[in-house]
Amino acid sequence: MVLDEIGCSPHPDALPLLMTHGWPGSILEFRKMIGPLTDPVAHGGEASDAFHLVIPALPGFGFSDKPRSTGWGVSKTAAAWAQLMDRLGYGQRWAAQGGDWGAAVTTALGHMRPPGLIGIHLNMVMYQATEAEIAQATPEEQRMLADAQRYDRELSGYMKVHSTRPQSVGFALSDSPVGLAAWVYALFQDASDSGGEPEQVIELDALIDDIMLYWLPNAGPSSIRFYWEGMREMHKQGPAPAMPVPAGVSMFPGELLRLSRRWAQARFDDLRFFAEAEHGGHFAAMENPTTLTEHVRETFRLLR
Image (cartoon, rainbow, N blue to C red; front, side, top):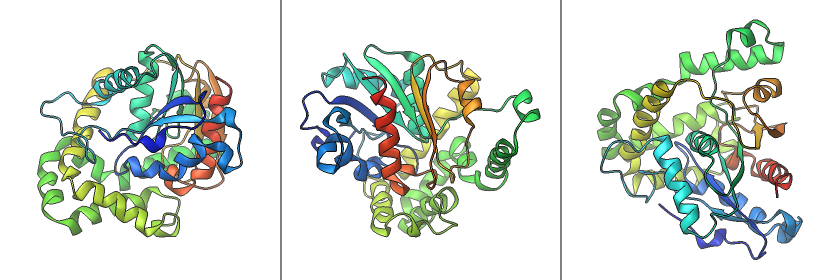
C-alpha cells in the first residue's frame, strides 16, 4: 500500500479520514483534494474542518503488494483498513470516504463498525432498486434506472470480463501499454461527465499518471482480480442491510449508478447529508474535486 506524509494536517485537532479509490482510479485521483482537506485555512476554509488523510492503494493496485492468496475482496480489505487506522494511531476516532470499489470497502467498514469509526461518506452507492421503488419511481428516478440499465446492457463488458476471466485479459494488460491505456481510457470515456471526451474534464497528464500507476508496477492483472473477489463476495452475501453508522452521500450527474434522496434514506439508518452536484461523474475526485471536498467537509462537520 502507499501512504503519503503530505496527508498530515498542520492542525492538531484534525479528524483522521481514510479515503479509498476504485478501478481504474488510483491514490492520485485525490491529489487535488489533499491540500483543501488537510489545510483548509490555506484554501479559504476553517481550521475546524481539517483532516489527517490516509489514502492507501487497494491490494494489487499501484505499488501495493499483489495478493498471494485468494480472499482479498471487499470485506478483507475493509478489515485491513480498520487495522491500518489503529496501527497509525488513529483508532480512537476516524472517518472513511470512497467511490467505486472504494465505496464498497467504505460501506463494508460501516457495517463492520470497527472501534473509532464515527461515520462514512460515499460518492457512489451500490444498490438494487426494489420492485416497489421501480413501480413508484418519479420521472427523475426513472432516468436513474434507465442509466443503470444502459450501463448494464452497453457499458459493463469490462466488469463482466474482470469478474469472470481476470487472468485471461490480465495477460493482455500486462503485455501491451497501448492495450492497457485503451482499456482504462474506455471507462473514463463512458463514466465521466464529459460526453465521451474525458480530457475535457480531467487534465490529460492526470489521465496518463493514472494509467502509469497500472503500467509501471504491472498492476493491470492484479487490480482486476479485485472484481473476481468482490463480485463473488457480493453475490454470496446478497442485499446489504441498512447502513447503521452516520453517513453522507453525494450524487454526481454523470455517475451511471445514482439514487434519489428517498431511496438513500431507505438504505441508511442515519443519513446526515445528501446532495446532488451540478456536474461531475464517476471520477468525482478528479472531475469536480471542489464540490466533493465541500461535501466531505459538510458531512463530517455534523459528526465532529
